Each structure stands twice: as C-alpha cells, then as structure tokens.
Image (cartoon, rainbow, N blue to C red):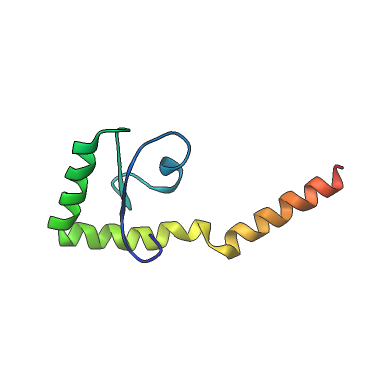
Length: 85
C-alpha cells in the first residue's frame, strides 16, 4: 500500500479489515471465497483509473502506520507500563 498498490484480501479475523478500507484503498472479500478474490484482482487489472485512485488512497491511508505515528504510541505504552509497575 505504501507503494501505491491497492490490496485485495480475504476478510479473515484480526487484520485485514483494520488495515484495508474496503472499496477505498483495496478490497475485502468473504473469507475463503477464492472466486470473489480473483474477480476483484481482475477488476483492478482491467480498470486503470480505479486502480490508480485506490493506489493513491492506499498511500495516504497507510500513513497511519508510519514510524512517526506508531513509535510514539509504543513509547507511551512502555512508559505507562514502567509507571504502573
């Protein structure tokens, strides 16, 4: 996503739906629905404009996981753990 590639993933528990915004920066499909997964991949291959727009959205949306956002959260967690020891 950080390279501008929209993701297509199964909507399995614990992960993809927290990262991918369905139909905005990628697609989430029913878990184990291989036909739907392939359909969404072909859709992105065949639709340049949508793929490019979703890719731009992916670049923007994935910034919430950048080190300058995540590292202060980790730092705060560890400081809280030390304070409440």
